[in-house]
Amino acid sequence: MADQGGGVDRELNYKGIFGFLIALVVLLAVVFLVVWGVSAWQKTRLARQDAPPPVLAEARTKSVPAGPLLQSDPERDLKTLRAGEDAVLAGWSWIDASRTRARIPVDRAIEIVAARGFPPRTAAPAESAPANEVKK
Image (cartoon, rainbow, N blue to C red; front, side):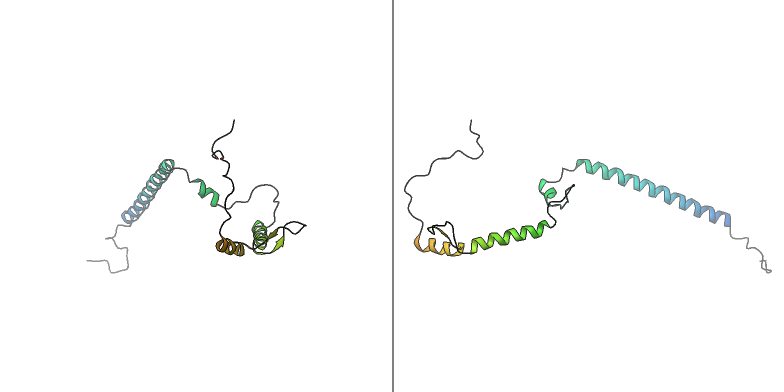
């Protein structure tokens, strides 16, 4: 007959249950360490097999050079430079003091060339050496 007086239940083996749980935790830790080690080994092995990144990928990374910065805001400076270049290309002005040559907007120059055509060549252009050859 079963113990009716609130005694210890003798059918459960607490020592076996806790022993199993401890063994399970230890086994999981060992499996985790093995999987982590294999993963780290594969990562280093595959990293050695990879080709180096292309040069353009390095050029796309934005980095600040060491030392004193000569420009406080390079992006703003570039925008200012481009705005000045656009003003020169789109504006009218005299090139020389005697007012014999003028600068005209690019769009107007294209219209003039389209209407009149290019002037005829008077002499053949001088032959030039290819850019990759070095003169001796």
